[in-house]
Image (cartoon, rainbow, N blue to C red; front, top):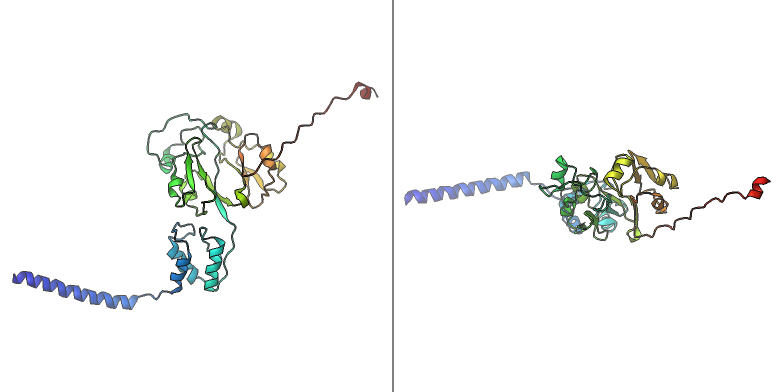
Length: 291
């Protein structure tokens, strides 16, 4: 009994001594935190998605308060309005950025990109991509197991079981970039968000030559260059057998859409331009030839 009491007393005294030591250490090394960090954190959306480049909203708030120049800091979920409010609160200048939206750059549906084999393993895009190109003959297309869907915290991505492709809901997308990082094929890109969710983009990432592309996917870009020639704004370039539309230069004129022979250029929420009728030159009349 005496031994038990002695043990309890000893542990109690040690606990008190350690508590006192910890208290003085905490007082000695405590870091004074700017109270504005708490206020800025409340103004941020609290998504903790990492779209700003920081681990969470708290780290973003700390950077906004402590840095003199916040031109490189931007929360895609909050947007321009909230960033301006935060800058006004801190007496700083907010960066201005156009709204962006995640864009799925693969048009190889099940009908256009048929399966040539069957995969029986872990249903994870990252796992598959490490040792396997996928169930179709295209090594650049969507694997279709939804890593990007799982990464999205805003329910903006869904897998269409009929097409086998991931679809983006632009009204829910916050352009946090989580899906971009999750896609091992690099098929998702953050592009400019046009009014009424309009868009023109090349839905293909294949760098193979035309004949190889057509054998694997009927909707792939063959790098023919017709779209590049018709673009009056220099928005389209051909590199590594693949066309790319620069959203900073594109004016949504839609001329390139009609020129694409495979339909690799996708048009969203816009009607295509009417195709110009082909002019057939008539043969010269015999009388005119005689003259």
